Image (tube, rainbow over the protein chains, first blue to last red):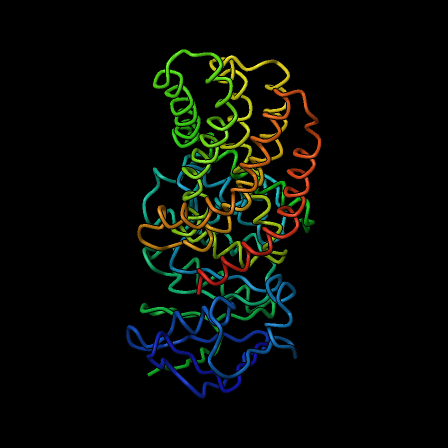
Length: 204
Length: 227
């Protein structure tokens, strides 16, 4: 369970938001909404621990994430604006390495199966620099399949994706929620998850 | 799926960085060729007087190694920073210091080790004795990892800055002076038939000290740079 109490965050001298409170329980999904520059990405980055909040606490299953540190990181997955994939490596190598960094070792068969599910059949061994923007995003999103994190923090997961990929992501999120996972995300495109109540948090 | 241990992670990072270095070979070669060029220019510039060349050899080789190692430091974290891999490394459920140590080891293998292997060949240009060459290699073996590790702190602090390369050298070079002093001191001691062990022991001590502290300091510097 993720709990945010009285959170305040600023960028330079500019206060982005303050007095933010919410709770995310297993099986719940929350969309962070707001205009450009309202602090959506900053909120997500604060939840990851990259930024230290001005005030307030972020609590994961009863303990502050600052104290949990690595125990928290083993239960969460963050997908930012940047794909975190290397041009020189193939899709296969990229996925295996990023899974390895998040503490999960996967073999080649599992990785190829995951990449095929993401619609990258036949592209597994190509260097990612020859892939299109959307395909590279798909490689990055493959991490969702090869991870057992409970909390997904997704910043604009649908950027550069086509209709087919968007429905696939909706499917993945629904599966994750059914496993009593949690999702926090931002998007400017509509994202509908079947049978789930979508809560939204509006920053202004 | 299997959970990985801390050592697995270290091996993973080293292997990843080595594979990346092999696919971007130009970067590796730049450091080595710079080292070879700088060292070779001295005998050409100073003239073929054996006594003088022998005397200046350790200093020239060490200074060239120091400068060559500065060249590749800028890239140590910047590529990972730009494509977002560094963010993911910070979210790894293992200690960031361990990942940083992995990157330092890989950096040394790519930019430090080739210099160590090349040094004896270049030493011949300066008419160095076999004894002095052996000590030089040992000194470089102990000293170049320190350069990579101390340099990593500077690289982490200057991450994402414009013109960070120059600032990096200004930050790191003064910190490398002890390595330079003991490294050249050892070779000089060998050529004057004195004991080399005090110099090499001090280099070894510096290496251990760097091994213990620099990964942690670099990890903290990276966290500051990411905010």
